[in-house]
Length: 416
Ligand SMILES: Nc1ncnc2c1ncn2[C@@H]1O[C@H](COP(=O)(O)OP(=O)(O)OP(=O)(O)O)[C@@H](O)[C@H]1O
Ligand SMILES: [Mg+2]
Image 1 (cartoon, rainbow, N blue to C red):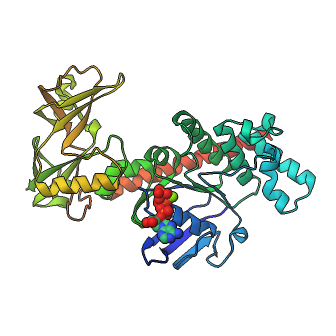
Image 2 (tube, protein in one colour):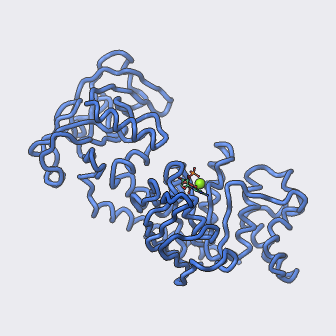
Image 3 (cartoon, helix red, strand yellow):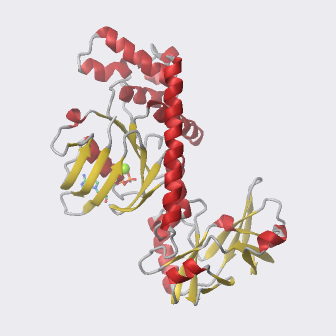
């Protein structure tokens, strides 16, 4: 096990385009770090530089306190699981897992011991003599992970390992990987463009955009205190709504009405002609279903409902709003970059499944104004971000995590 430190890592491919641009990232020993971002943002490139499959243009890659820039992949003792984990079809599950040990000429009993240990953890014991072709997708995935585990690697690296599984299996494997990582306590870097995987697996998540780090934080901090428009739009589904607004003396005027920011946020924003107000879908409700105490913590407004989507346990309503052309264009560009088609000039709001508001009619909504964020549309910066509250969320996540690892290790020790 080892920590990973990246210092100002840059990668320029042949044509000079910086695929990774000045990334600095500290990953603690035993931590589960996620690299997430849209296609082409440099996730795989960064991972391949950790393993040594790609030269580093400049910067330092430090693993376990040692600079590894000039070490060959096999000298780094890391284990990588790719998206297309190649298993050898003619070899049994046992020999597939044992493969790296055979290459190292490890003695037979030692091979047997380590493969059996890995198979135990991965619940593959009764499949050891079978061939990969006869296994389910999830079982094959576990064989690929077994091969990584037997090597006693310092760090596990995953590049979208679940992307070619169906949704149900992906969910199962996600749980399994999380459990396994906790149990083994091995430092892990996991690449995905799926924000659900990012939110559920990681201790911390590093959001990348065009080779540049946007924010590194626990899932809760990313969600509650996003650094900028990009992170705010990327994390959360349906995504945060962005509405044009003006602010003067802490008073916000936006398409659904007016409200006043608290002192801290008012001071942080100042007076501005054009900002974007960010409101997550769940900060809204059907005003009819809100009690008086809650009503006072927000505002109510009337708007025409374009479409409703009833999902049984949840319901969404779509409310169109007007926006200046520059904002319309900006939202369109952002959606395109985020591979999402939802950031349009209509708010997606989450209302109780029991709400009977009707499509094409006006309805009264309630909005929680305490949780809105205000963004600078030019720079994308979140002007109202509460850095201290955010850091506290990440601190709490780290504490929880340490307790879980201690528990898992205690249980493993008791079992053996
Ligand atoms: N061998 C290469 N030569 C030149 N450019 C490359 C090469 N590999 C990747 N790139 C470029 O580097 C950037 C980052 O690519 P990378 O594969 O790291 O993205 P990614 O975040 O893993 O994307 P995806 O989610 O699609 O896998 C892209 O703009 C890509 O075009
Ligand atoms: Mg990739």
